[in-house]
Length: 195
Image (tube, rainbow, N blue to C red; front, side, top):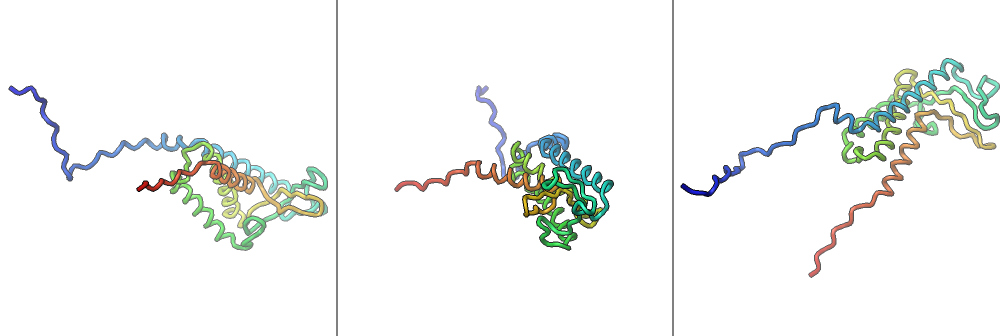
């Protein structure tokens, strides 16, 4: 009788590799919990503030003579205006195109979540702000056919374009993502072998 243990069966080309077990859906969703929580918070704040404005001020309301609410006189007013374009009223009248772009952006973020590094906390904060803001303005476009803007800021003679909570989330989210992108060290290029 031989003392050598039996050898394992040979691996052939026909033997498929064993795929790692896929985690259940709740575990996969919890991996992005900070993104979900921040996106839902921005979305809820945006929609609640807009509902308050719609209930309080007729559309359109701009300027104290038409009933705008001065919060800090000469600097900060609450108004009720509509924007069918994007930031600074660019692409005005293109609400359907911008709604389609918003849906496409949200889908792209979901599809490229690994490439965007959404498993990292800082990226989840950036994209939580961004997604909540995109969803808030998308809801307006679908319900009202325009985005409700109500924050009206004046800096002397300069009037900043009227905006809302969703716009703030989008801008801050982009700034945070650019900041973490610039701070993340890039992988070093491989050095060529010396002869």
